[in-house]
Image 1 (cartoon, rainbow, N blue to C red):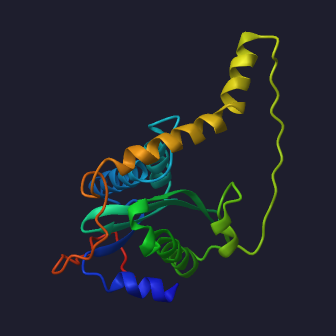
Image 2: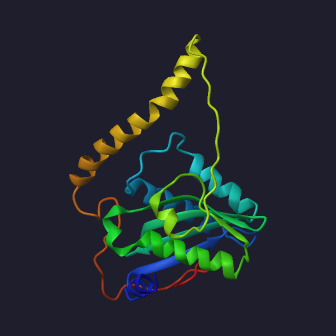
Image 3: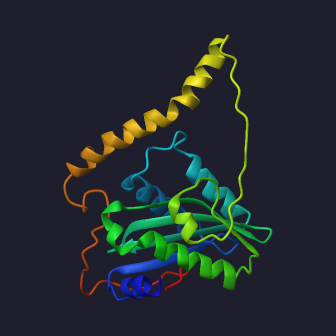
Length: 217
């Protein structure tokens, strides 16, 4: 991880920001953070959110309570990776993350995760780090424990409402996979990275300034 961090720090066009939601957070910084996350999400491998305004509302609510920790990596001033964390009652939880796949070779997600973890341990002094729901393989590289949560979801197939709910939940995975397959060729035919995402080729003499609510590796 130190090698990846140093490699990114050597780039003149790379910047790492950690935006902390508190009373000192300027509205313009919050708006920029929201725009950065949404831009990265659109350039990522993930399908569109079922509720398009959810991420924005979540970021605003977390910032208003002082719980927000939003990390962003920009390449050539274009957001290329973003993560939404919440710090509450001594626990830091990774809630949402995304990165531009065209920058996969830079391991931006890992570098950003390491940057936020350092902050929540050294500054927030949390006693627990939680990577949230899901058994994604990358979580095993960071976490030492795994908790299982079981739930029951029931539908009344004798009613139209129950049938509709069952179709939405049971067929959602197939639909998501179909959309993901559809997005891949569309992204490949869209041309260079400059159209929608970051260019991961180093650019000399780029600005390396860090704004007020940011932290450099």
